[in-house]
Structure formats: C-alpha cells, structure tokens
Amino acid sequence: MFSATWNFIKRHRRKFIYTGAVIGGIYFLGKYAQKKIRDIQEREANEYIAQARRQFHFESNQRTCNMTVLSMLPSLKEAIVTQLNSECLTALLKTKPANKLEIWEDLKIISFTRTIVSVYSTCLLVVLLRVQLNIIGGYLYLDNSANKNTVAPLAPPDVQQQYLSSIQHLLGDGLIELITVVKKAVQNSLESMSLKQSLSLLELEQQISWIRAEVEGSERPLSWYILADDQEALADQACGLTENDVMTIRLLNETRDLLDRRATLRSHDAPEQPIRSL
Figure 1: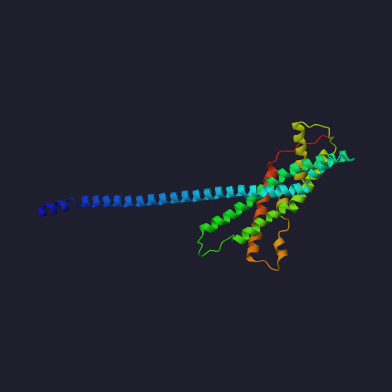
Figure 2: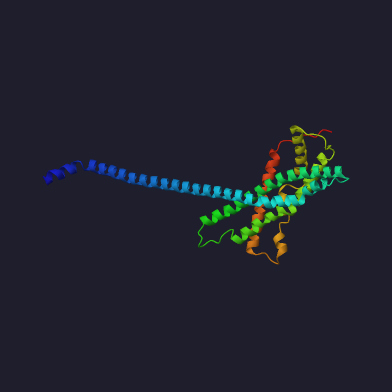
C-alpha cells in the first residue's frame, strides 16, 4: 500500500509541487493582503482620529474666542463711552443753554461717531482675538502632539499672557486714534447737514459709505489700531530680551502678517465705493 502511494506521488510529483506552490503562494498572498488591509485601516483610523481631534480643538478654540469677546465687550463699551461722552451733552441741553444749536451739532457728530466706532472696534476686537487664539491654539496643538518629556513647550503660559495683553492697545491708544479718524470723517460728511434734515435709508447708507471710504482709505491700515506699530516695544521695557520675550515678539509678528494679509485680500475684493456728488 505504501509502495503504491509512493509510486503515485512520484508519478504526480510535479503536480503536487505546483499545487503546493500555488497553495503556499495563495496563503502568503492572503496573509500579505490581510496585513496591508490592517495597515490601511489603522492609517485611516489614525487619520480620522487626528482629524476629529483637530476639529474638536478648532471648535473649542472658537468657543473660547466667543466667550472672550463677550467678556471684553464691557471694557470696550466703557472705553468708547469715556472718549465719546454724549450723556453730558444731553444733560447740558436740559438746562436750556444759550448755545443750544452748537451743542446739538456736537451731539450729532458724537452720536454718529460713537455708533461707527462701536462697529469698527467690535469687529477689530473679534478679528484680533480670533487670530491670537488660533495662533496660540496652533502652538498648543503642536505641543500636545509632540513628546512632552523631550520637547519644551512652544508657547508657555507666560508667553501666552504677555502675547494676549497686547489687546490693551486696541482699548487704549488704538481706540483713541480710531475715534480721531472716524470723527474727522463724520465731520466732513455730516457737518454741513442741517439738524432738521431727515435721511432716508438710502441716504444714510450713502453717508456711511462715504465715511467708511475716508476711514479705510487713510494711510494707516485698520490693523494699526489693533496692535502697536512698534515691533520692538518689549526691547524698550527691559535691558535684554528673554526667551519668552523673543517668542512673544515672534507671535506678534505672525499676528501682524495675518492681519495685513487679510486686509490686503479684503482691499482687493472690496467693491467700489459710491462717488459723492459735488
């Protein structure tokens, strides 16, 4: 029996070899395909997790930005009211002064100026906070993705605090300069308008367009009101720059680049302003 089986194998040994080779090849190909499929699935899963983590990080950053804006609005409102105080003029009118017409003219200019400055400053505040928090968020994301045991944080808490404190320029000198520019534009546009003259919605829109054209067409871009123009302000406050100072200046320069780039793109896409009739 063993002899017959052996003879059978010898007669068909090539078939057995080919069959074994085919079966072995199919087996190893199957294993290789399974490994590749697992690698692809793991890669897709890692990419999905990374994308979900980035999306969560971005959405969390936007929520933080919105809450920060809401917390800053009272300070901004207080600064605007302090610089453009119309309440004192209203109270003065109640005393029936001799220069009542002059006070009404001042109240007209201040009221328009306060409204337009409120819109500009709020928009600038939102833009600045979004840019700053997204820049910090990007560095924090890189810090979390890196090995914390071997890599120093790119944006430590001291740098973040120093960087975010630059918003005080918008609430101080930047706001004062913005008020000056807007008030001048309002005076040029409305000073000759009679207090008894009523404005239609279209006429009001034209007046605002003329004011915007003068404000946004000035030599200084709107980004100047957001951040101080002196890029070496930190160097003036200390004898030497620390590593945190250098990092803060780097963040401020990145912020300026983003703001200027956005302003440049906006100026290219902005529609033409209506031409004021003579």
